[in-house]
Length: 451
Length: 78
Image (cartoon, rainbow over all chains, first blue to last red; front, side, top):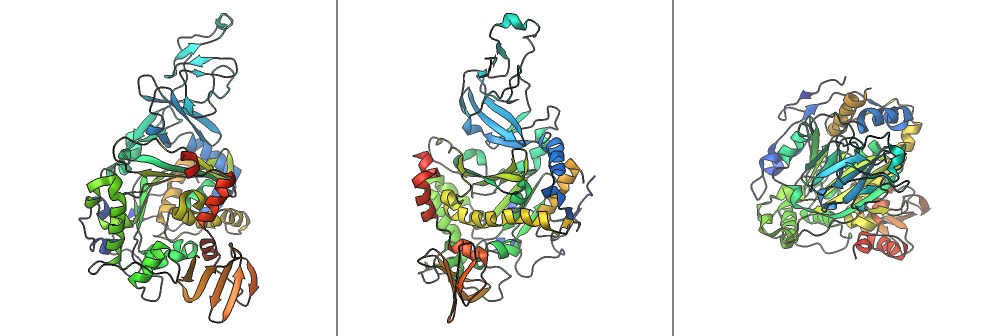
C-alpha cells in the first residue's frame, strides 16, 4: 500500500525565491476566481521510484491487469458520436472497445469482439445501423442486445435472450466520454469529483473539438506523460521561453484523484540572474527574432495584463463578451490539470487536452495525443478528426507554435527511454515540490499496481 | 529567419543559416551545428541542443513537406 501523503502549509513550505503564484494573482486586472486561489501543496516524501516501471515487460503486464483493465479512462468526445449508430473505437494496452450512440440517444460501450468467434466487430470509427460481424455475420443492435445469427437453426444451443454484448460502465463529463473495462468498478462520481469541482467555471462541454493530433512516441507512456507534468524541465528543455515564463514560480496542487501545475506566463524565470525588460520578455513570448521590432506595451499596463488583453481580443470574435469576465491569469498562465491515470485537461480557456497511453501492448512505445477545444458562436462546428503524425513528422507541422514546444519535449523522450535502459540507478530521483505531481502519479500507480 | 540569444548566456546568438543549419556566434567566434545540436564546424564546439531544435523548427517548412505527401489539420479539414 502506498504511504499517505501530508498537507503542507503554503506559508512555510520550501519554495523558489521570488514571487509566489498567489503574489502574481494579486496584480491581476480582473477578479481572480476562487479556483485559482486554492492551494493544496502536499509532502509526497522523497522516495525514488523504480526504473523498472518504465523499462520492464513485467511492470507493464501488471499495469494492464491492475490499472488499464480497472480504471476509468477518457475514450472520446460526445460530439464525435452525435447520431444513433455513430461509434468510436477505443484501444488500450492491446484491448479494443466500442463506444456507441444508441437509437435511444444514450451512449454504451462494449468489448470490440464478436461473441461467436471473437473477431473485432468494428475496425473503424463510423456509423452503422447494427453491429454486424464481418466474419460470419452475427449481429447485435446498437444497444448491444442480440439481433441476428445467420442460419440460426445451427445455433439452437445459444440462448438468444441473453446473447447480448457485455456492457461496460460509461459516464460523461464536460463533453468527454469515459469508459471502464471493469464491470464492477467504483462509481464515476467518486473518480471525477475533485476535477469536476474545479471546472465549474470553465465548462469544456461548451467547447468543440477544433483539432486532434496523435503520434506514436518511442518511449514508455509514462515518460511521455511525465514530460508534461512539471515546469522544472523548462530551463533545460524550453530555454527560449525563460524570459517570459515563471517556471520555478509554478504552483503545484495535489488532490486525491487529480493534481495541477500552474505556471505563470508574462513573468521571467527566477533562474535568470539579470533583470529582463518587458520588451525582451514580450519578444520571447511572441517568439520574435532577436533583431525584430517588438510591439509597444501600452502605458500603465504590465506585461501579463498586455498579454491577457491580446488574448481577450483574439478570443472575442468566437467567445463574445464572456472574455471580459476572464482574468489575466486565465488567459496567460498554463493551468495543467491531470486526472489519474492519463488525462490532462488544461484549466481556463487554453483548450489544451492531453492523453497518454501505451501503444498497443508495447511498453516501449506510447500514443501521445493533443486535443484542442475551442469556443464557437452559433451552431457547434463538426469535431476535427484525429490526425496521426508519421514518425518523421513534427508536432509543429500540425500545431504550429504549440507543436514547436512539443517537439522539444519529444526530442527528449526516446533519449529518456534509452537512458533508463542504460542507467546503473535503480530509481528515478524527483524533486520534493516542483515534481510533486510526478510523485503523485507514482503514488497512485503504487496504489493501483503495487510496488 | 528564426534567431534568439540564449537566456543563460545573452551574448550568444542562435540563428538558422541559409543551409538549414544552426549558426552560433559569440563576438568573433562562430560554430555551425545541425538542427539537433550536433557539431559541424567552427570554433564554438558546444551548443544547447534544445535551442538548436527550437531555432531550426520552422512549421512553415514542415507544412510544405506535409502538403506534398502527408496529412495535416489543414489538409484533413478542407
